[in-house]
Structures are given as structure tokens and as C-alpha cells.
Image (cartoon, rainbow, N blue to C red; front, side, top):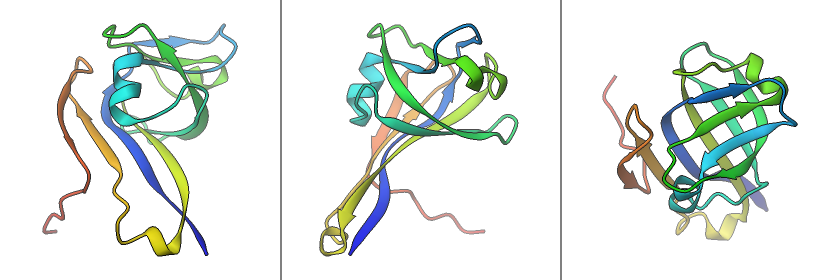
Length: 126
């Protein structure tokens, strides 16, 4: 059986640009793409923490070390500069691999610099 699991996450990225008159996609600093293991043109899900919007697009590489997170095309209606977002990529794996599979989680500050990386989400008491 195949399962869809979280492959990578850029947590609390800060939108730097919102370009309506662009072909589409989300431009992400190439260094952040590498850190998360997200490929250029890979489908991504974006969850806007600031306004609750959720949408699908694909990643394109922005200049390395530029800290750019640019929401482009029609998606620009769903995110504005300074919004905080979560960018996720998913993968399909065989259920036999689930016990050894670990996602890549990249945590960012308000300037899109990496503050830490992990491969599990800590459980918090509610």
C-alpha cells in the first residue's frame, strides 16, 4: 500500500514578494530549497498562517541566499508580503517504509534565515 506523507516543510516562512502579473508558482531561495530537499518545479502546498488560505502551486528557485519567498500569479491573491506561511511538499512511500521514514523540517525566522532543522514534530501538551 502507498501512503502520502510529509516530505519537507519550510515552517513560518515570511512572504517577501507577491507578484500578480507573473506566470505562476512560488519562488523560494535556492538555499532553502536545498535545505528542505524540495526540487524546482515540485508541487507544494502553502498554508497561510496570517489569513488561513491554503493553496497548491509549484516551487521555482530564487537566487541563493536571497531569502526570497515570492507568491506569484493567481496565488498572489492568497498571500501578501509579510504574511507567515508554511510550505510543504509530500511524497508517496510504501507502507513498509513508514517506520524508517523521516521528513525534513526547516524552521525559519522572520527574515527567512534557518533557525533549526529537525525530522520530527515535537508533541506539545494541550
